[in-house]
Length: 264
Ligand code: COA
Image (cartoon, rainbow, N blue to C red; front, side, top):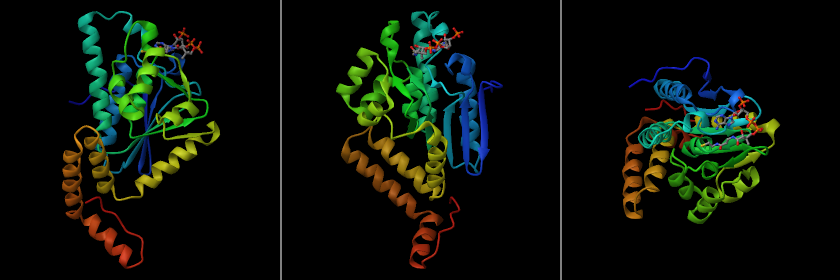
């Protein structure tokens, strides 16, 4: 089902092969209320459906925040039934992002807290400014992470560290996030856009189906036992051999020229 776009709350821009999706609620530190979640869904559906888009960058408007979490004004009204539905809705969106079939790079400037940290974790790669602050502060609100944080965080940083982040609830610095593996890179604020763009362009220049299959192999691999993951890898390796791009890539190497990818 196609989500209804929320005009202005989520911006969508395409430059070359890279789409940038921007959560645009800077006065609320880009907190995710229901219309913003709908807007995000619509923007990701658009990026998925656009064949020209190879890589997506997700970011937040303004200097202060990537996303400062789910909207606490909405959380305050939750009942047991609506809270479960709220969590399932956020989880479904992030499952969609994680399985988009195209790499999504979270460009993190400022706060990535609660739902914001969870959104970042559903992205393929996270690049943070030195000024970024990440964390799962839900425990301070009498809550736990509800958009997949209790599940994705230990998978990224290990169980003990995930326990500490979720139980203490304090923000961690970008450097600490890098040290524990929560983000891939930390760069000065003034280089954040350029570095993110560079990584996006580097990925966009590779064979698109190979990138998709590699993501699928890694994603499924972390969810299943090793033997099953290896089978998934072998099957996807086989599917690569069915692509024209694999013929092109190997032939171009042997002919000492640059490959021209068709995405087929
Ligand atoms: N939901 C709703 N509104 C939020 C929000 C959230 N998660 N995070 C920030 N805001 C709003 C504030 O209410 C404030 O709105 P107002 O100007 O209408 O009062 C505005 O964004 C600016 O935030 P403010 O708290 O004034 O900025 P600060 O610099 O003093 O503090 C934070 C920044 C990030 C430390 C603080 O906003 C915060 O703790 N936010 C909540 C983080 C959180 O718990 N997220 C997880 C939710 S599950």
